[in-house]
Length: 399
Image (tube, rainbow, N blue to C red; front, side, top):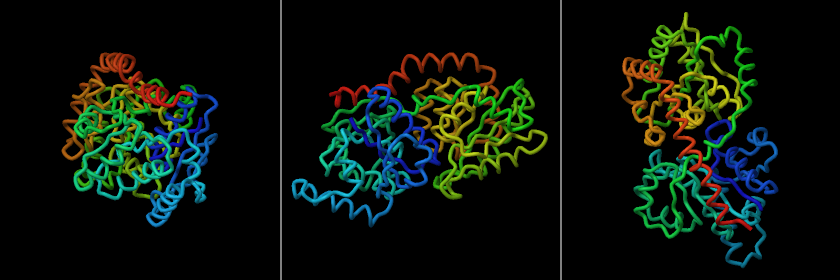
């Protein structure tokens, strides 16, 4: 069996690569002899992280190249397979199934270019007569191009939604394919060994393992028009100072996106947040672009976590870490609601230092109860739902 994973942006976005690695490992666990190909717009940069997997350059983020690839795929289909396909198209053609992991790329919330780019691999799979599925995503809303996306989704073998809102939204479309609510595939990502994470923390110099740790993952929010990074960073800095004063906790700032380029590099926000905290707090900042399993292991060492990046929050709650989320889109509110902690999420556009500090203190006081509650929710619902993504694929493609 051979699977193609699409929807990736760049491996330096560790939420993106967490989904890709989790899906690849889950597929190999089910089919150990399967071949996995990840289609990447930045293949050369991504090869290092995706070692052991085939990395195929894809054209979806290059408009002219994408149009040429679509035309070539259409010619291949029109000639009954006689026109020779490109290496990218050959990868689609040889696949048992194409699995799209676009996360929240299929929405017009951030403009029309992003979802259009994410539909190109789906169209190519369809033209090459290879079944494709949309796996564990937040999809919609659509305004101007809804008929187009409905047609594309109708061609899918199945669609799984990672939240109730997406499931309800797509249910109203009456798609002819199977639609099911599951959970984000990144819940299945295995963290690096705990000993490795603790050794890394000791290497930072001055880190005290006997003190409690508050983990924070910031974001530049450069493409979010409704929120000011400076406002929420000031709120987080204030809350961490108060928590440190009250509990003796040491802050650990863990960026989850390292590029490409300055706009996408959350180390800028991490440094800004560290500066706002200042002495005597002097938070520890992770500057090395660690892998998703390594970052998850570090987050697992925290006693409490504050996150704005979706997959940093998933890394925390998948290990039952009491988590406070700062939401810049509905997907994070939906996640916290599903995990049973909707109280511990604030809007990034309106968050204040006092509100965040009070909620962080409340979460700290209730952390044992919250940890136990999240653990039960994970075991009884979330992890089985995440595994369900592969189960559905298994039912569809099992030899």
